[in-house]
Amino acid sequence: MKKGKLIRTAYKAMSVLLIGFGLIYGLTMPIPAIPMLGHSWRNLLYHVPMWYTQIILLLVSGWHSIQYLQKAKPESDIRAAQAASVGIMFGILGLVTGIVWSRVTWGAAMANDNFSAWWAWDPKQIFALILLLIYLAYFLLRDSFNEPTQKAKISAVYNIFGAALIIPMYYIIPKAMGGLHPGSGEEGIMATLGNLGSYRAIFYPVVLGFILLAVWIWEIRVRFRIAEHKILEADL
Image (tube, rainbow, N blue to C red; front, side, top):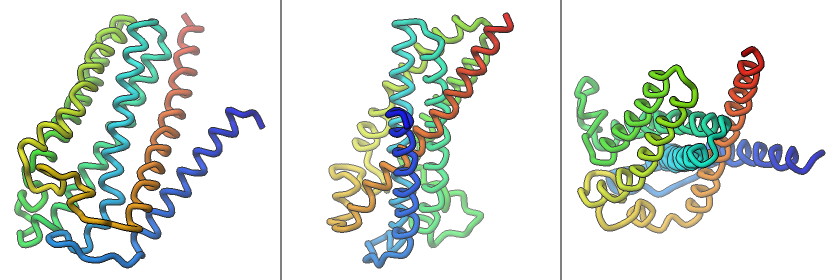
């Protein structure tokens, strides 16, 4: 087996093992209740990794947009677009898991038909949604151009702008504004939840597992789109 193929097989296997471990052990292990969150903080294993994964993929997307502007290779534009696509997918999953978590914590005393039971207008929620809309606009922008080079160049500039907003919108602005989220204000989420002990040893590997899964999905999409691009070029 070639070295490259062996590495790809290894990271895919590691992704399955780490996520499987987190899903099974995270749902069955005994954990202490935490004020306001109770035992729902098991969702930390599923909600928070979505955001780490999204951030990694969107930064990768921005990097490949920079590469495109430097070298004008269509493959870089394809890699950027597909990384953004996978990042959006994990961002949506992050919002959904967050909405469910909000319902059983912040909105526990509210009726199901009360919108605030599901969406608390917390700064982190708002800016996560705004960033998601910014990247959805990235794909609308791509679809508005027919000429491939023009589409790739303008999309790359917009994508770099989007990537530059990630850290301010996810960390700097919400932290300054405060809010309901654990980790708002002075402390980070892990410090707010206290000393998790063995739970930390589960959390970080699961984050790695989801990131590897995202890379796996991205790699498949990139290979498909590059093959599609080569076929279209051959037909011209």
